[in-house]
Image (cartoon, rainbow, N blue to C red):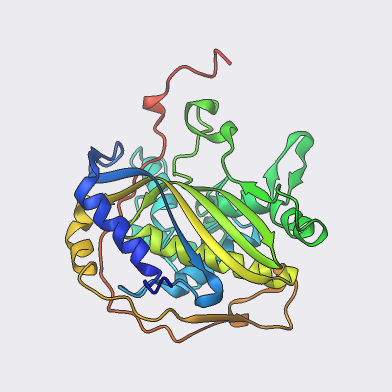
Length: 326
């Protein structure tokens, strides 16, 4: 019988990257990193909710971000209003590019976020991140101006055809990515967790996430919590038990300015995972609110702070002439 704590998979991957990872630099920031390619970890959700315990994971952020995605919104105002600031950097980065040209007033990031909170018109114009996760989950842009609600489709298909193999949704839309996009239309921020596949076996719902780019110290613990929560919510509204969350990585990396914190984390022993329950009276995904989701028994090791590397994205200066040929 395997008695290894499931969090050890994550810790072993950190050790693998530090020991065997290729040394690279982020093209956007120049930050050094070590990375490996093609790894996988998995968690049995019936045995506890995988909010990692060797450091405190920001549960409020996990919860509000996922509900933000599920709302279909692409504007950070909901997060800002709830004092969740994990997406502040990206719209401010876009605003600052324009303010540096003297086309809009210069604001610090703190001033920018405060204005998002207080000024709805400003938030509507500058707080939006078009073609981000929530919009593509719930309002994928299709021809003839219609939109596709991938989440509603997934739920309907899982209920009606549980044994089929097509329960997939994606955010990888080439029309708006890198030099595949028309000039000026490419996203300037990265979409990292890009494909989600659900499966029903023995009345249990499992989920596999493919994450093309994975910041293993700051981002991945958050992503594990987010997609485990999504799996549990979808299972709840469809009437299934929970199965596994399977996390598949493309480029799994640790930034150089996180090495010290990772080494500290690796000295810690995992603790028992918490449990997560959802109000049994809520069966419609659009009715779920933060107060309907209850996390109990979360007793992690202390927080390990580190700076976010606002990495990746697309710069028009890097464009390869693809659109004229296609």
